[in-house]
View 1 (cartoon, rainbow, N blue to C red):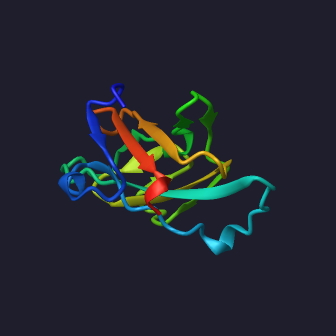
View 2 (tube, rainbow, N blue to C red):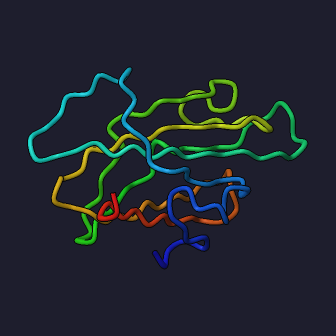
Length: 139
């Protein structure tokens, strides 16, 4: 958690107005039609980016599909898929367009026996690296 200037949890109301934040965990989007692996589960994390600045027309590099999820043993998990909910805001896998609101639902496949993770998000699109503590023991 120490890597992030902003340290938070999914859906934390304190950070919902930040240009980058993570919403509460959701069910995995059915349209992805992903194959389940024995001993694993899907974990879907919606990340939101919205810069309301007046820089219209240009783009900022933003790569949420590269955010690693790390368990307490230090094993990293990369997103296996994602759903982009606003094509105007985020295009080509790396372009965020101001002032649109981007919502990308990142899907990870993690071992069932792991209950705690940290998502580390850092990008040129937002000023503060963010770490997100994900605790599945409360679900």
